[in-house]
Length: 236
Image 1: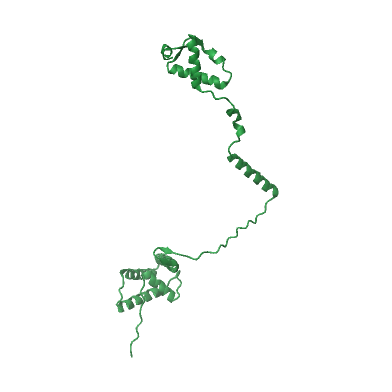
Image 2: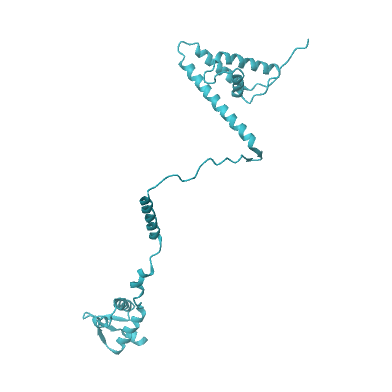
């Protein structure tokens, strides 16, 4: 009679093999019977060797880890064994979650680096259902209008007092002062200001006098009289 043989499927790693054994025997992953799991784990590895399958070192490392946990459980104090069991359970849970995520991505894989998914239904209801008092809505509306008005540019009437004032160029006042000094030897400074009726004109005269003194075209003596310099007379 021909002997029956069974093919052992390839596993991606020791965690993959442990998950297979846990699922096959319906073991609670949070409370793993290490002795039972170790026996089946070693049996599977031996079967892999008999079928001339290459057993990676990581499978052997996991076997040694399970043996160590089983040994620790035989000690009077099993605190270390419980910690090691929890660590193994945590790794298995994370690995199972990664496998589920990989399976979903595999379903959405198109090719290259492209993954697609089905459009999700919009379950949000954007209908505004709140109720407000009319007076509250009125205050909110007026407040919104006020904030909008603050962002608007100022009206033209706000510039009427500035725009209507006559602009007096300083250069014009410089020429007027020089023309006046060409006909007179000296002119009191206050006399020049006396003929100015607008504040802008007085400011222009003040700046013109400073500019003429700076350029050396006129001088101001101790009696506050301005005189034209000889250099300016020759230029004229």
